[in-house]
Amino acid sequence: MNTIRDVVAQGPFDDANWDNFDQFKVPSWYRAKKLGIFIHWGVYAVPAYGSEWYARNMYVPDTDVHKHHVETYGPVDQFGYKDFIPQFKAEHYDATEWAEVFKESGAEFVMPVAEHHDGFAMYDTPWNRWNAKNMGPKRDVTAELAEAVRKQGMRFAVSTHREENCWFFNGGTLMPSDVQDPEYRDLYGPTDNMPFCEKMRVVHGSTPGDEWLDDWLVRTCELVDKFRPEVVFFDWWIEEALYAQRFRTFAAYYYNRCKEWGIEGAINFKNEAMPANAGVWDIERGQLKGIRYPFWQTDTSLAYNSWGYIEGLKYRTPEAIIHDFVDIVSKNGALLMNVGPRADGTIPQEQKDLLRELGGWMKINGEGIYDTYPWKIYGEGPTAVPEGHFAEKNRKDFGPEDLRFTTKDGIIYVHFLGWPESGEVHIKNFYKDRRFCHKHLAKVGLLGHPGEVEYTRDDEAMKVKLPAEKPGKYAWCLKLTPA
Image 1: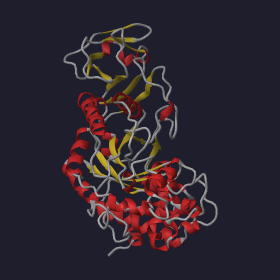
Image 2 (image 1 turned 60 degrees about the vertical axis):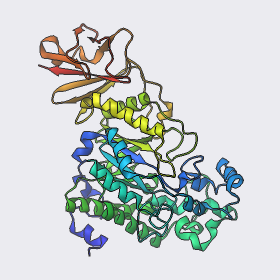
Image 3 (image 1 turned 180 degrees about the vertical axis):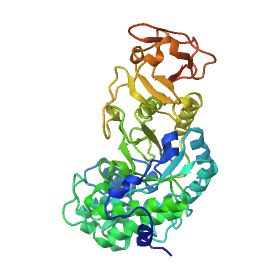
Image 4 (image 1 turned 30 degrees about the vertical axis):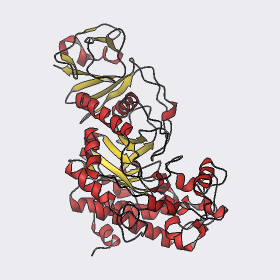
């Protein structure tokens, strides 16, 4: 049986440094399809309060979540996070139904969080007794989903946030709590080595030692071997220096396994956790101002206020989701859109409806998304897009003058993010482009509309006259075919 070191030593990727990772190539399917489904589902769906960070905040004094927990369940030394696990039954979980809903959205891949910061594995593993096969659902819910997703012709991916478990529960060191009980150390992490800190980003005092880090590496490589994921997603804490060598070892292990199995795989990372050419860079709840090469991704959620299920989710509109998706694709990006199921395993109807709206839009306009590349500019229009993590909340709504461009096979797709009252789309950035003068433009169409549409051209813009009936409800796409 090959060890981690054997796999690293025998493959084309090695972990000595990042230099040879420039042989990584973005998977062709990823680049072509651009849409994935993220899933935050776990024990934190039982209290369904605050956010998926309930597990941490219930142990943080003077927080709303801590107050709610004490009032609802009792002090944290009498009812801790572990005590939610028997209530996490997933009694209505149907992986086949989930996969069918995700397929309807137009997504190419599905990515559950296999283990969140809370230390509870959503899959069967010998390395963690706190897992969904042993406790709670008493089913390998992740394996069931992997099978169902692949039966639908989609690709399977995983996310692991295990690296953050080492500090996630350290608020429990500030008060009497079950976090301090050695019996539960394998769930709550090495909190005695990770003193509580307000900012969480900076950990004062000791850090996890080699035993913890080696354990992290073994568990993460086992996840690869068990599911053969075509994307592996890491959250922000993987960039911390203490994980640097083992993260590089994992990357070499994973890419070598992909080579061995004949699959195209990618690692998602944030900030500067690995070189830009070694994986697919991810922005959390944010976008970019312009086109970025290489290929990148936004991960965000159907709800603004939580990744996991809580009562009182505040949902995006279908229009906002589609507009962001078009903007991201025009800038050489992909969208990873999150759902948050209930503890019983059901996906809320609001979330199903949003995914189906997205899928319905894709059936009409997917030609301008799938297999496309950015044009020489991403688009035009007055609405500025704030850049970076968590910037999405600062973006104003797009309107009819906001256009986004994509291209393939010489065709230019012009997505307009609002239906103009004048009934005309004005494309200012084409009037000087000689490829689109009258004698070189074979036809102009509108996706979802039969036949061609009329256009004129002057020194200011190319002006496309729209039909009276809208083909769809949210964003529309012109198809400009050169002669």
